[in-house]
Image (cartoon, rainbow over the protein chains, first blue to last red):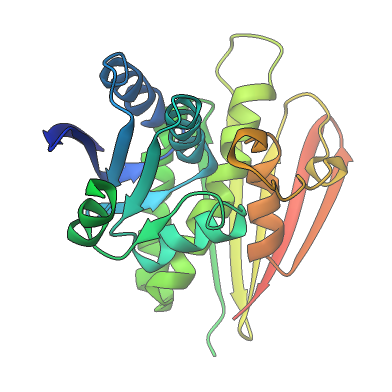
Length: 112
Length: 138
């Protein structure tokens, strides 16, 4: 698992690549919490390179989404592969967090 | 169709999730399973293994968790055995579909995912071991 971040027009973009599971999610969770210490209220998860996700990984994403929501901000996910999307769908999260096909599309939406 | 049987053991440590993935890749190569199917299997075994490692042991000793996969006539049968505390994951209620993000919880989601992706699941406790058998039709 590889996790990085960048800011674009005050939108916090967190990119996660590889496998987000019970072994790697504590590191991701810590990284995300650290980045959220700033006052960003727009967050985009770039999952174009995310190959695999389990419920342990969902936990880290959900916790970040809740934090942003409590700031009355906006959270979005982009670039999910078919499998990662399936996990979000089974979990009932596709109706809770907006999902865009590409990062570009999500950034346009978040800039509004 | 040729039948296949594949067994392996993992130590009770979450770092073994990588080994689990390697075993499943190997099993997928031997049997020619689709990538989508291999990934579904991976997440099911991952969720159950993660539960066992996280909540299954009352001591700090290293334990072994046994996995057996059988493929016969387009049916996959999985067996996971652990010597942890008695735990029947099927007794866990499915989480309610959250209406709002702030109400969403992760607890119980792992087994919910397993239920959705597998066709049949059975639990048995025998001789100090939990044994979970699952079936997936291809």
